[in-house]
Image (cartoon, rainbow, N blue to C red; front, side, top):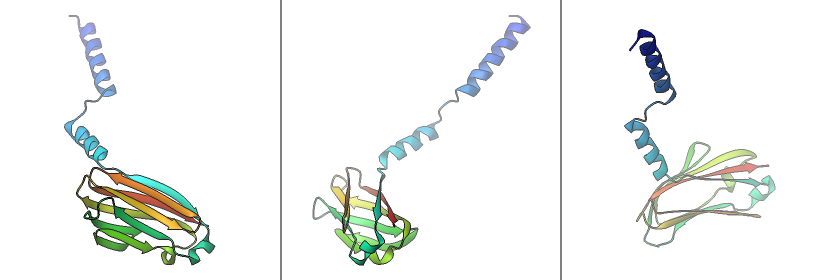
Amino acid sequence: MSIRLFALATLCTATLAAAFPLLTQDTVVADISLNKQQTQETSISLNSEDLKSPHLLIINASVQSTRLRGYIELDGKRLLNFDRDGIEINLSPSLKPGQHKLKILGQYEPADASVTVRFEGINTEISQQVSGNGSLNQTIIIDVR
């Protein structure tokens, strides 16, 4: 093999290696963990006048003996830690004009149960459901006008 052909082959190999990096085991593990986590996000708009009435966050499971553990966070601040079979909290006193991020994070047992997260108020009702993995990761973006 001539030096010119060897140099060309080496250059092509280096170019291909840079263009198509090998997948590492870490990359595959990261993909698997992301696929296990079910994240749901919903956005709603509310009229500030409607906040004079209750706006309830209700979390319950399909099976009464399901245990829910975790916390509810509004704009990065914990509103409530929970370890029970159902939750109902009035969010109206905590909401002001502007955009808010409500997060519900936790686990439920048994993992094969289903859990429903509802937000109910005047002219507003949304529902999110998760099942099958034992993990809660729900986000509701609330825009108060």
